[in-house]
Length: 406
Image 1 (cartoon, helix red, strand yellow):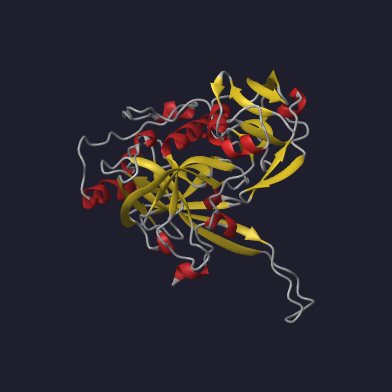
Image 2: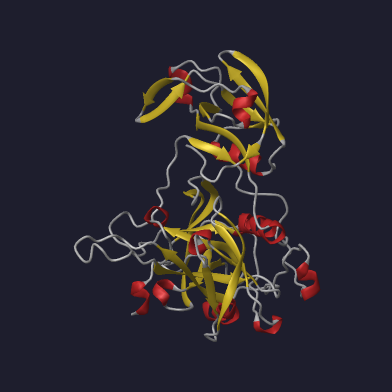
């Protein structure tokens, strides 16, 4: 079948099967300023004149009742597209064929999914679906294919926005929901193009919330939705929807346990509230700038605090400080004494962060959330224990690099 020759779902195997773990992490924000739409998700048709200026995309209005899977499919499938990205890669040298033959570049195609979000022609997909693409094409439910332009992409959240020049009446925007309202056990529906089988629908439930997965830039994406709705290679970039037909997440990764390349009931979707924020900035500016502290840190528990007589029973151990970062310039101190407790290794002797901007910090996710509300150049005030002495450190946040350390 045609899809067998395509590099599907992701360009890197490490992005396919993400290990969901804890430990030290480079802290940066994965959200920006401004949101694509609002929690009311009202609709207005944007004219071409409005589209010429930086503007926020408008959304379809969801129904007020729960829909059947068939109703969700009938409403939403026309707005789900198949994304084909084409890139040129160098040929592999093979001395056993013709060692004197010139190396000709080869064309490689990757297949994923996406969905329409407004009548102007904006389409949301995953960054890794179009990463490195020289050409991007999308096809709709009527099998019409057209060239798409990459408006902007953000490897820190694995989100990209495309745009097609199509008449507004030919576009079916999907309604965007509120991922903060999602609960474990909620029913969900996914539509995408697994293995090139266009507009396939699957259903399941929300298996867990507040997961974090590895982003293409090696950072973290927080508040990720875990689902058992079957998603496979080619579903990447497609919508995960609630019973009202609202998009609550963008399907991005699967975890297979290393036993298969197919679905085993563990998939991850980037929450739509994060996507709204990022997509709005990509539409306006073509890029997203995330604030960045520049540290690696690990959470403290009561056992660690008791064994090593730490000054507090909650907070974050600063285990590493990136040279040149805002944290380094502010004088934050990294740990240097390695200890292992219950199989987990920590670096002690550095600063212990207990508050950020007056808010108690007892987890990595909490500090990342606070940083995500900032922009580069903003100040983050940290309450820190340095030994037994409490000090205040003001960090001027920098811009998250393409590949944060940690």
